[in-house]
Length: 303
Image (cartoon, rainbow, N blue to C red; front, side, top):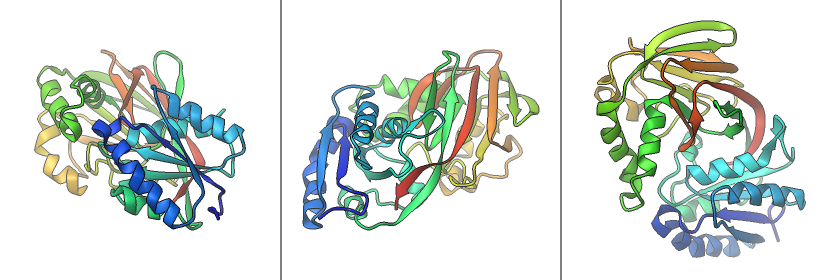
């Protein structure tokens, strides 16, 4: 017996979350076996392997790909499911089992953070079609993101957190934030949002497809990952806003805010007098100048 989408391909980084993914795999497999779902497991071994595994599975005719891990694993699998501005296979389905150090992507869809509960949700045929964002940094390489991207302080924080090692676990982002904030400098930024030009002195630009990032912060509470638009938040006030608004951000109650400009666009370009680091789905991708776009309905998400 198998899913209506065919056998599952579990793509997992066993080292993620200080080994938490490896520890969760037996429980996940037990749930799938109990539901008589056919599956196989791909254990990734290097950066980009999840993207390679996803693309190879689709080339081999498999259609139900399950990212097991955090936002980084989801990011890589999605990049393997999208090519040339559209889905690599229109009938493919993405499942997500949150494990490891955390997965903010699933929060926008009410999917479980518990690995066993998430595995149980892989049965059935309920899917939701969602958009995928694209980002092209100064290196000219275009990549996809499914959750949230940032240029500025957010990119610098993710870069710093990545260098803190694995011992801090889910606290790496918070540690990276406090280590980065004192020396970070705002810059003059110029935006072209669907042909409308804007200029501010800003310290961060959020480009959101979904709502949550940073371990449960609802930074873009109005985002709809199926509306064919990116939600853009430009932080124009003092850097102190980034932590004085923090309690409200967790509740998604920080908007409207006098120092946050809110835009929506299908196409966006960002330039900064001092190049900003760009991150997407928790992965540092490059620097500004950067351009962003949206691919409507590129992924069918198992919900």
